[in-house]
Image (cartoon, rainbow, N blue to C red; front, side, top):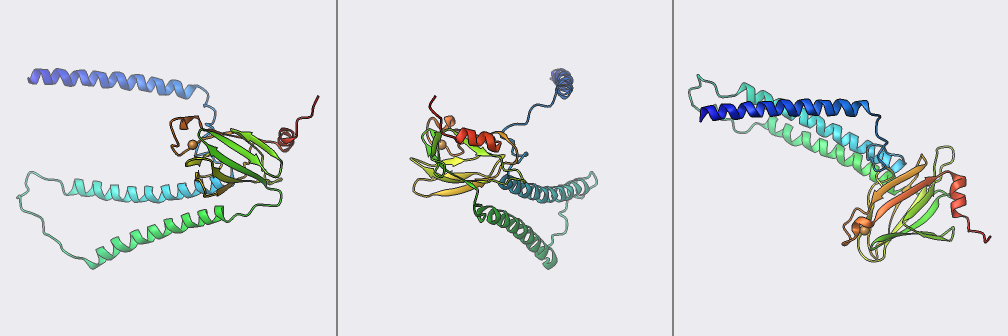
Length: 257
Ligand SMILES: [Cu+2]
């Protein structure tokens, strides 16, 4: 049996070496090839003010929770190593400690302060995004979720279209945000284009709203983020951010030839 165990562990060792060599080669090959183009749904590449605020908040929350993880992990590792079972242990239980005001106050107050800090930071970002009022030149869009497609109406421009949302770029020199009213024709849908803004649901008989001000032109993708029926996966979100002249041309009525 022991011989078999030895053989098995040898085989596992060889397999591990092979996997290590293969994965190292794969990583080296991947590093040599050019960096892949940025994903159009990359949550780490915000391109609009609401997405930037959310990104900043998520990094803050990540930093706080990472610090908690590091402190807890260090204390845990220290305790495991320092108080491990030793050969010369006499087998008796260590002294039992009950009640310590300092420790109890510390582990009550510190978490409360952390939760309050996270709550305040989150409330501020939510308020900043939700309380923004449309500028005079803002583009107004009504997005209506249907099973299983998107309808976009531009009330001020007398345009109705489907599945492609076209908006002008909003660079700092010419800010032109787009305010989107979210409605649903049937069931719950959810509008989420990660590089432009947070996720907002489209609920029947309950109008919601959101806004975006994309700083760079390009195509931004998203997906209906609420399971809304068997063909839910067809509800790809496509936001085309265009230079102002191109946007005007797209909006202009087609003249008869
Ligand atoms: Cu949907």
